[in-house]
Length: 142
Image 1 (cartoon, rainbow, N blue to C red):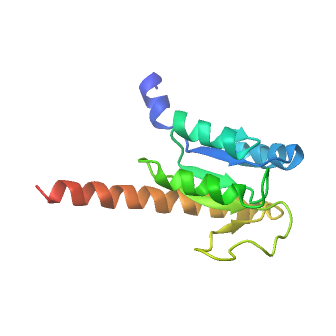
Image 2: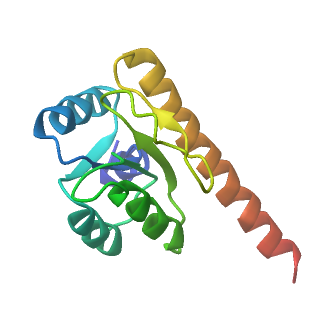
């Protein structure tokens, strides 16, 4: 296999946003063990910068960081990106405020590793299906 074949096999890029270093490192390690390329950010501002610089298949963000709803701001920014990454909140502990007001986001809890990896794969798969449908619509509207 040449370099081109290797590039084709590259797995999805995930942006992980969490201000808790231990939680961020744990989740990053789990996702990388699951075969994903993971970039991490410790704040909403850092995440927004990474979203503007690179393309991600999935953005996972903690809800509370430098402000109570910083994670929702990260997800809102991600949804405005032209490449339209899948988005989800991730919580290292139970948080009853998630989903309050507005559209509820999928909450991924990392304490169950198989479910975590299954949810991540499902989100990335749904995003890929939406992109294919969008491409098909574009080509049929000629």
